[in-house]
Image (cartoon, rainbow, N blue to C red; front, side, top):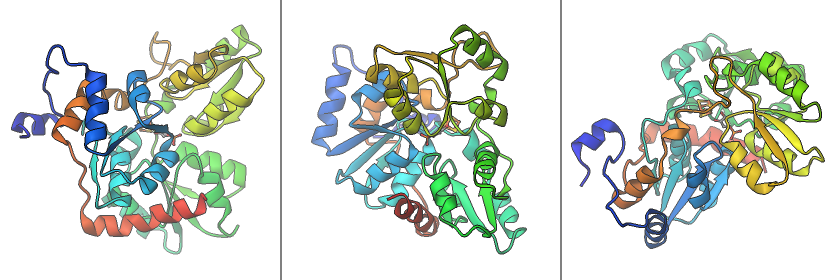
Length: 326
Ligand code: 13P
Ligand code: SF4
């Protein structure tokens, strides 16, 4: 039974009984319930380690579309759970803490975005996957940082495009493709916080280090990058490049997989500009804990719901992205 206090909290707040081997129980419940545990690279290391599948936003959507599990447990943020539910309406989709939001999704309320779209008739609407289902329902094609360039390049050169909500990713695409997409003015609070000055100080101390940057970062940070890409693209580059040191300007959770894949290489998290903290974390992603994952599987709650009318509209633009990403 789901407690009313939990409903108010947004997650099942129950202590794991003493003596329970939480990891073994999570794996046992997942097997018994035919559930797949998926995790984003920004989640805590132990969550990534227990997951069946870890990926960037694109890979997570692709995996959801092909899984034959009955339950998807999405260890990530709310929009990722919504995307999975839209792709798999017949499955139960769980996110261990409903408070796991995203500042980019929050920066783009559907009613205001609807007005913005109306103000630009004749434009194709491209939305970053970091949006609510309601915004996706107003969208022609969804993109992730992993395929945005490919999707935009697939459209005729003179196509008029509205792009939202990330102004940094939008500016980056405009600068590389020479397009003039009209941009919604949203941003990610984590990626906006990187300090160019502190990255350059790190580079001076580690002159051979390559700088890896997520395109949600501001333009000046992107300019000093050796590689700009999605979390999966940055991970791949760090494995394939001959450099042995990397300064990583994205959420610091990705360092776990980078270090696991290349234990002999050095990965230095780029610091934010507003504190003495050495690395930059997404407070929403870090809400997903082992205890919440355990309770989520035990009670099969919190479950993601998407209104059918919204889902029917939103699925088209997500499927268009998946088609164009093949
Ligand atoms: P990726 O698509 O690169 O995994 O990024 C998701 C995200 O939330 C970045 O902040
Ligand atoms: Fe959203 Fe930024 Fe967190 Fe990614 S890092 S989930 S864009 S708030």
